[in-house]
Amino acid sequence: MSRPVQTAKTRPDKRENMMGKKAATKDSKRKTNNRPDWDTYFLDIIEVVSRRSTCRRRSVGAGLVRDRRILATGYNGAPSKLKHCLDIGCLREQLNVPSGERHELCRGLHAEQNVIIQAALHGVITKGSTLYCTNHPCVICAKMIINAGIVRIVIRDDYSDPLAAQMLKEAEISVIQL
Image 1: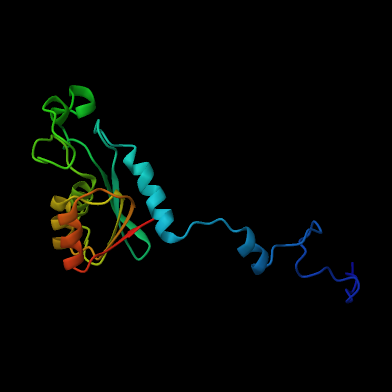
Image 2: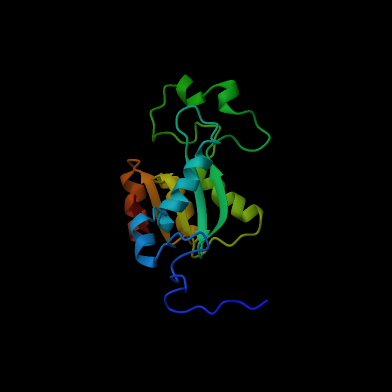
């Protein structure tokens, strides 16, 4: 059985699919494209990671990314194999310790600490990576970030720690808030 010859009048438009509907062109895709940029994409993922937090005061998530690939994630909470503050209560609340003070009076690790530890535990190199975090790092985490070779930080919410901000600036680590 021979196929009919298509002419300019009978040939379907290149932008039409088999159902006769016009396919999206590059220009129309750009106008209706609601894909997030890479920083928003990774920060949105880290927002979900933060929901694993076991801290009664604040849920924080962190992730390390290099070459658009997630290297490790972490959230704030008690070390592995220890009871969570959600289950036994918060020592800081019991002692009325204000936020940002006396970090040593806490059972939990910060999300930034946990993501660096997870990378180390699994043999993942952190040097040259970007840290995505729901909050600006504290000074303790800033020092770890500097020594881990992280070169850029993207945050969603601020956290008032002037010394942390100053140290990150001095180390030439850019901090971008979305």
